[in-house]
Length: 260
Image (tube, rainbow, N blue to C red; front, side):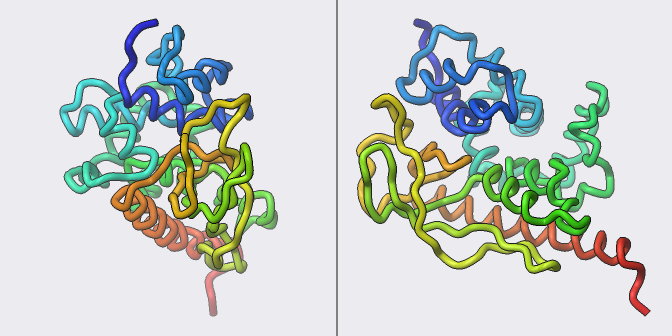
């Protein structure tokens, strides 16, 4: 098998869960699982990644802005999924304009229909922006169907949870879910829940112990977070929620009519 970069494996770790559910990317979840769990696969990982309609344009624009040639470089993949200090040098407004230009040149599909100039104040080079800004689900919060929208937003975003116990192929983690009170989207109180650690004896995060912080995507433990990675993910999630709430307040006012 060809030698694959750590960045390709990291991409697979985060991309596998929604891919195997059929939500994004090509029908190659078996190859993603193999790569994420073992670090090896005979599949063309770059080709698979390039067919993730959402993640790939972000990685390509980030590569252009940072001068890093490989979109699957670990530094770019980490920045996109959980954030990193790499983003400190990335002008978010410029990133948003470049992403909009790239999508426009490719022929914007309905998938990208919400990415426009009005959305640029929310733009960041992260998966969080894609979930809360580009995906349509946040618009359903003010449009009368909040419960399924909150569920999808909560599972699509990358969550963090601290392990309190390990039960075979599952871990119990303390985590925070999204809540919506009709006006504001925020993180709720800590709760405990089970997340999947492994399948058929294979895992993306081995030797999990109590106290570990895990990144969770669609209830799958996809990564172990270090202190800086945890801080970055928390900070960027909070920033994205604040930016999203500004738009939601505006949309609610437009929907209900300007206050008298």
